Image 1 (cartoon, rainbow, N blue to C red):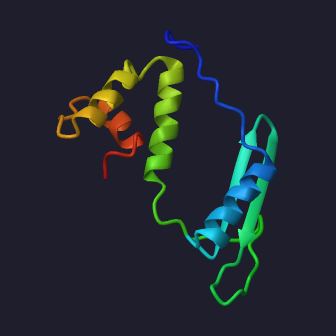
Image 2: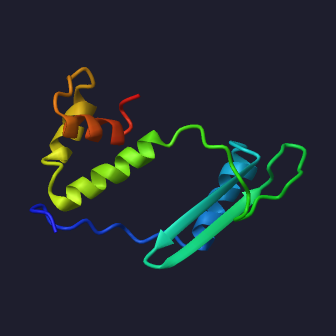
Length: 124
C-alpha cells in the first residue's frame, strides 16, 4: 500500500450496458463496423462483441477475433503509472495532470512526471 492509500478500481460495467454501448457506437453512430470490449474484474473475464470485421457484413466478431494493434503505448504507460502510484513511487501525479490540463505548454521535467504526462494521454 502506498502512502496515498491503495487504488480501488471502479466496478466493471455489466455485459448488458456494454452491449448497449456497442450497439450505439456501431449501429447508431456508425463509428465502426464492429467492436469488441473485454473486461477483467477479480478472476472473472467477460467479452462482449457486436458487429463484423468487414463493412460487407462478413466475419462476425467474437472473443476469438484477432485484431491488429496500432499502438498500446498509452495503455501500458497508464498501467505502469497506476502501479507506481500504488507503490508510492509516482508522487503527486494528480497535481501534475491537473496543471497539464490547465497549461498544456508546461514542460515536464522528471521521469515520473513524463510517464504521468503520457499516461494521461497528453503526450505522443
